Image (cartoon, rainbow, N blue to C red; front, side):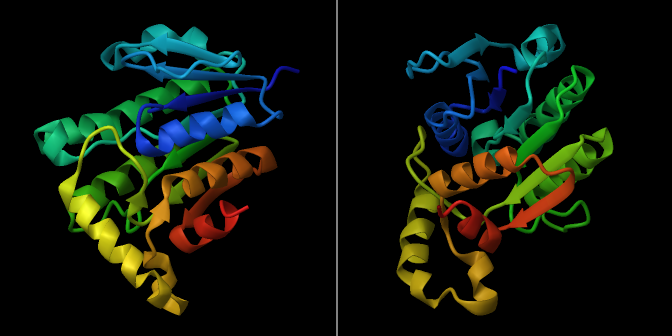
Amino acid sequence: MTKIAMVLGATGLVGSEVTKELLSRVAWDEVRVLVRRPLELQHLKLKQTVVDWEQIGQYKEQFQGVQAVFCCLGTTIKKAGSQKEFERVDLDYPLAAASLAKSQGVKQFLAVSSMGASSKSRTFYSRTKGRAEDGLVGIGFQGLHLFRPSLLLGEREEFRPGERAAAVLMKGLDFLMVGKAAKYRAIQGKTVAKAMVNIALANTRGVHIYENEVIHVVGGH
């Protein structure tokens, strides 16, 4: 059987790394990406579809035959322009795509969330991520995998000065991040991507949450 993966958010830091990681693995025969604009990346296994996220229901045929969906959709409030628009990208779009995936027989759904995600959080960002997690759990995938990384390191398309400064600081403090502090260690987007692909290949049933320190281990080989 042809093994097909789909990536949502393939232009982002983690999404681009997940796409490249999937293309490099012989286990996957085809990698589909739903994007707002075409990737410059070229590969025989890569199938790109430019979509309108407001009309995602029109693309259900793209989910047919897919074994695993990797959801790496995400933005910042600053880039989105408002909390409402942030929710649209980080909450509404992932849940709409997940519902569509489930209706088309997708068994595994893997999503990038965030450290501290909780629908009961006092912080808007963490609360939104938690609401997304809760919504995904409710959809009822055979295997749902939620990844909660700390500060992500790597090259992004857009420059984020705040994150860049934090990354420099976190790299300098990395040797101190042991024991209980390990969950706060900054993590490379490539490491998160490898962890997601490794977990997908394990094809585990049930709902699983991977905290930052676990992602470091699973994605470190």
